[in-house]
Image (cartoon, rainbow, N blue to C red; front, side):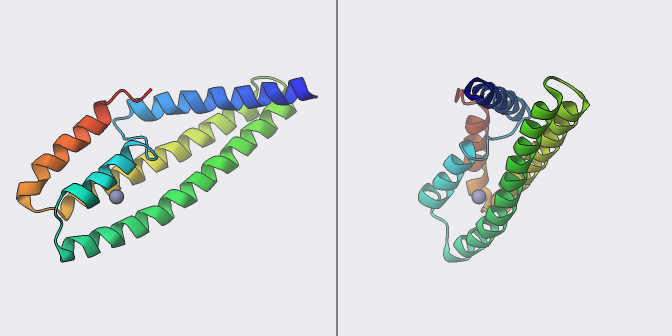
Amino acid sequence: MVLRRNFLVALIAFAAAIAGVFAGRALLPQPSHTGAELHALLHEDFNLDAAQKSRLDKLELDFGVRKRALELELRADNARLAEAIEAEHGNGPKVAAAIDGSHMTMGELQKATLEHVFAMRSILRPEQTARFDAAVVKALTADTR
Ligand SMILES: [Zn+2]
């Protein structure tokens, strides 16, 4: 029983690791990691004026809601994957469908994150965008693993 649970946990961790690679390849910040760095940079180093700050707060609020919803969905996807693995004792059609489902959700999260990055960029003054772009490129190409 314990062995079986460990196996499930390992499989889920493995799936999550693949997902991480998938997310990293798709030209996107890992939302929890580089996204946070970009935010810190914007908030602390960019000398945003009051109007920009209030627009940024609104963007963060909207993105926060969307991101939390998708993260919950990902958790549900993982639960479905665990169920499918238990049901099929291997790599059957339910497992394949569950993996496809979680990739779809991850894709949604990636799209939402990228949209958010562009939304944040759109509030910047022209002289600020070059620096933001450089920070994005750095975040995307940083070797975080
Ligand atoms: Zn943001």
